[in-house]
Image (tube, rainbow, N blue to C red; front, side, top):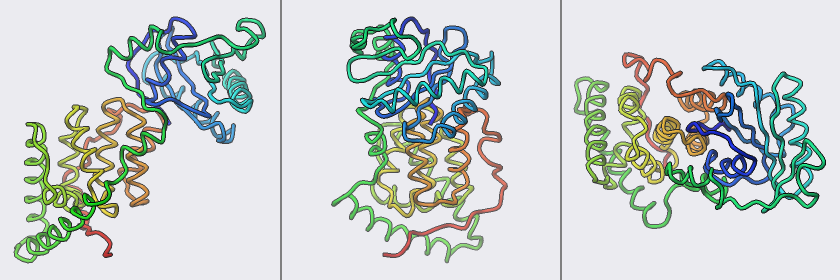
Length: 340
């Protein structure tokens, strides 16, 4: 729900409305967005569906603002923007503004955007009855966001599609590669004096080779990708990859490529590492989408739950400590895909 954002100085209402899609990574619809301020600087932001019960959204927004204040100067001012052509968006925005005020937050703005116009929900005459005309492309906020390299997808569904698996011939080729990888894994363990050590050694070497090659401009073939999708189910191997993953652009491409190519039953560690990488880079929406995919595959995957909780609370990545988990933690039993 939350978004990690670069510091931006708020100037006027048009800038505020223009910056929201860049903050989220997509154009919101049927949503309410809250933005927390330190002085006149945007510090934190989050979005919720209009259809989410008001008490739930209010609690989430209040916790986000409170936790943001604990990380530095207090967040005492909030702004809300409702999106949607229906009165429900405006009414929910008013309701949440009142709820946050009752919790001690100063509400600097409560706006409702409908198409190319917006209304102020706090007064009757500061915007025209038909709404104030708004053009995102002409705002200073949009220009600044574009200069920073920030992009906007059409909607949240577009973000979710980024992490969906490949199909058609690519999916068939990966299924065949996983068959070969499983035979390779069985052979490795059968011939090893110490199965755990053999898997750890082979897995970490494969991770290093794959990441170094990708950083140099290469791409994994199907057999390399399939092998990683198996060995990353071993916790020491996964934690080795975790320790090497930061916010570099090539790493986001690396984990996104692997997430899309991984067989659905094996994707949980890979999608979780994509979530971590996206979170570290400030792309909270992509991080959330990746973690959702991980938990659809394995609802009990603990690292995905840890990161999902931290993301929902608006915590920065450095709050995950130790990073990664203790390398001497007990080994996770390796996993193969469910048989077809």
